[in-house]
Each structure stands twice: as C-alpha cells, then as structure tokens.
Amino acid sequence: MTDRFAHHLRLDQIRDGERIDLVADDSERRAIADRLNLMALDRLDAHVTLSPSGGVVRAEGRIAATLEQSCVVTNDPVASHVDEPFAILFMPEPQSGAPDDEIELGEQDCDVVFYDGGAIDLGTAIADTLALCLDPYPRSASADAALREAGVLTEEQASPFAALAALQGRPDSD
Image (cartoon, rainbow, N blue to C red; front, side, top):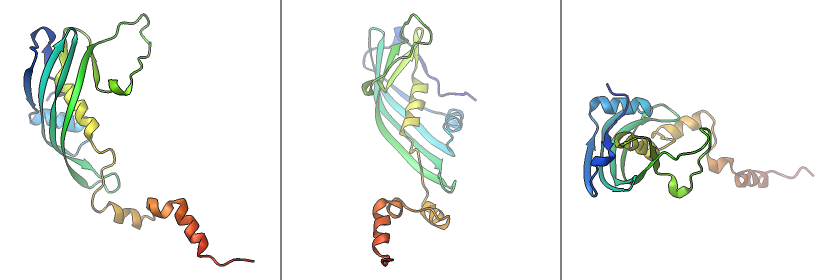
C-alpha cells in the first residue's frame, strides 16, 4: 500500500497542453482516507492540463471525489461529493541564505506547491487539494437533535438579541 497518491512527473518530459487523467486505485484511496481522517473514499479522480513555462508548471483541471466524513457531533457517516475546479502552480523551492527564513504567501499564492529537483508530484498535490475541498465541520441529519438533547443552544438562541428578548419578557422588580 502506498502512503500517498504519488504521481511524479519529470519537468523535462512535460509538454505544453498535456492532459493527464489520474484515478486513485483502492490502496491509494485507503491511504488518502487514512491521511485525511475520512471514513471512506470511494472515488478520487482528477483531470489535469499542464502548462510549463521555465521552471514553473501550471496545472489546471477538475477534481472529483465521493467520500464519507465523520459527523462532528454524532460520529455518524456523512456522505459527500466533491466536484471542484482547481489551479496549482508548481514552482522551484525558493533559494535563501538562511534555512529558517519564512516565506510570506499572499492570497493569490495559496495554490503554490514548491518542488525541489527535476520533478513535481501531481498526485500528492491533488490529494492536498481534496483536503482543502472537505467540509471542516460535517454534520449528519441527527446532529441538531443530539445537540438539543445535550443542552447546546443554537446561534439564534445564544445571540445577544435572544438575551434582550428574554429580558423584555421579565416583570420589573421596582
């Protein structure tokens, strides 16, 4: 079993406009599910078009996945489907004088993957893109009932306006 959905591409063999279709096999899906703490990953595929320019490679395409996450309240399975476009820039690792220099990335740089050497790892970048597409707080249909039973207030019930409304209903103590 592989520990990642690795798909290494040598930079000197990438052609402009090259299209690659990646489909994760059973063992790769299990490894990605373990890494992303998913209950199941039934499908993961990506359709990518590559455009190299100097040492930079732009990968644009679409990621599709069928998966189950664990509900943050009940731990029940929550089925989910991902079908998202993506754009990733593979750039050479920046050279710096000190090994501990921090690199500042702006909002436009969020989909930059640095590489070192003569190859990029498209598969791992796709798995990382899937991680960014996941619902960070998946909730099952029974989550609201479980929260009510535990005495957790909804946002509406806990708002300052709800507290003011409750105070308006109280009789004056004067």
